[in-house]
Length: 58
Image (tube, rainbow, N blue to C red; front, side):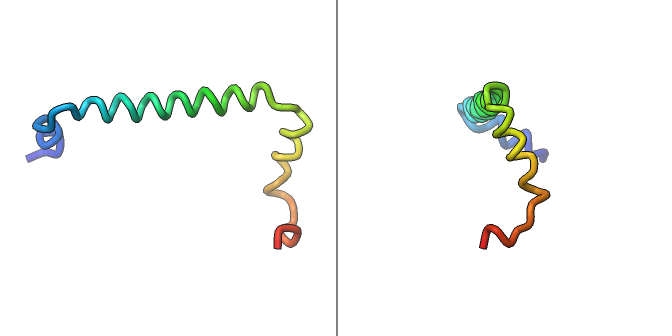
């Protein structure tokens, strides 16, 4: 028996798929808006974080 057969027997399982999609979509739109509206200087500083020495954080 395939896994999809188990899901078909659960009533209201489609609500979980729809709600998880909406959460992902709203999070994606929120991050996209934050990046688009963010200050360019802040984005420049954030982009250099992986290149910095880790000794500053301990």
